[in-house]
Amino acid sequence: MSDLNFQDISTVNSGLQPKPVTVTAAATIAPTTFLTFITGTTALVTITPPVTGAHMLAIVAKSTNWLGALTTGNILVASITNGTSWANRVNFFVYDPLSNKYYPQYAVLTTTAP
Image 1 (cartoon, rainbow, N blue to C red):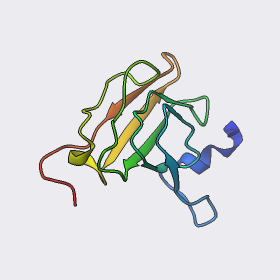
Image 2: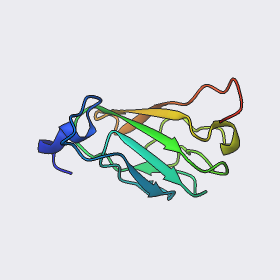
Image 3: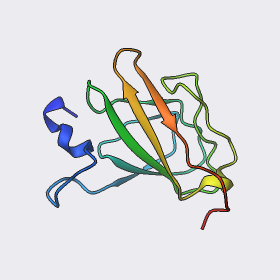
Image 4: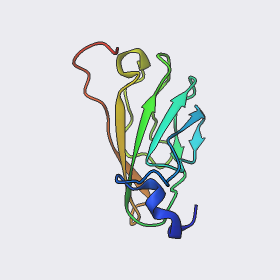
């Protein structure tokens, strides 16, 4: 994605922007919209930044057995690995272009997922 298309990952979109996408869980994903759904079990290691500047992405695991996020790539803090607890909950990732890392805010686990 070009920096010229930054609006595609904005938290405010019009009906003209691309709709949220679903990707298969992999060590590396490359979101193209603000909201991305993940299916599958592979742990996330690296998020390919869709733009070069600071931005935020929302990622929702649709699988109850997703292995979460690890710190061996560009994610600063690992998630828990029990996907059953946080399936269908939104997780935010804020990108810092100075460190080339995503700072995550994982879903709060107070009740079981719907």
